[in-house]
Length: 61
Image 1 (cartoon, rainbow, N blue to C red):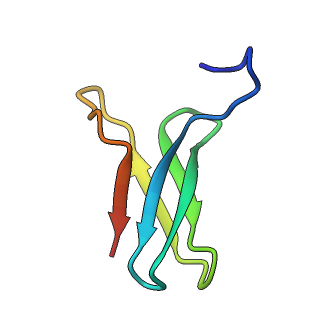
Image 2: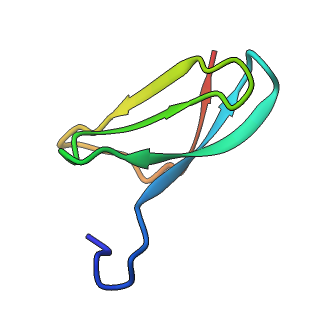
């Protein structure tokens, strides 16, 4: 965790619904990245799996 620097872990999310890009942040339980489209408030959840991925950018349909 990056608590020493005060930075929150995030991933980049492109919301196709409104053609916008934003960051979504790790939840408090550290089980998923959660965020909302800044225009229409559609929710996006990217769960964290044990296998994981190195990808930092995702698209929500």
